[in-house]
Image (tube, rainbow, N blue to C red; front, side, top):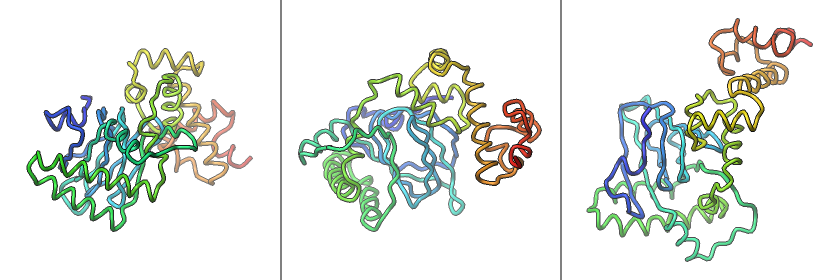
Length: 279
């Protein structure tokens, strides 16, 4: 699968501090590999969106929008029922813009160094009006857009800072110098998501061969065996604590049919899922 580099795949102006795009498409995508070269607000207008990152998976509909940190992620975009097109206003901004904002308002983060790379925010009246303003700005000449987007960025960040605090701001500038921890976070966060080794390698910023080698060194297991064990352990939790039936969960934990799930469960736990549930 081709890697999409944003915003570079949408523009030839790679050096711009702020950029905005009214992104619309009639094609759905599933786990598209995306390399974000700038921090990004994705103001969802029509459709639904899911993003896998190294720290979490977030799914939203048009009542919410996303803030995503520079880096790798997997994106799924689905069309709405009421319209032919998926639509999102993409607002890109550089790390320098963020640092300038922190310096201008003398922001301090006295709590912890949050490492989240993606956030979901709910629209309110102010934010709905803000996005409508971005749509209007997108229709203006490029030189005027640049001047206004700087002001709109400051307006948005001031508002979000007041209602959400500053933790999310500082998490955007925190670096992943600890490559090993970044790798572990990616694996642990996505242990129940049905991602391929290629997709996990992409999120980890590694080649497939390096990912496999690092995995076996860190977890003392092959990826396939480790992920199977984690999903079977999760299925045991669902059976015992959530009163789920085996037929309800076999697909959720990565099996194509019920018989394969029952056999794998019995191999690991020594009893069938039903027997485990009744014990």
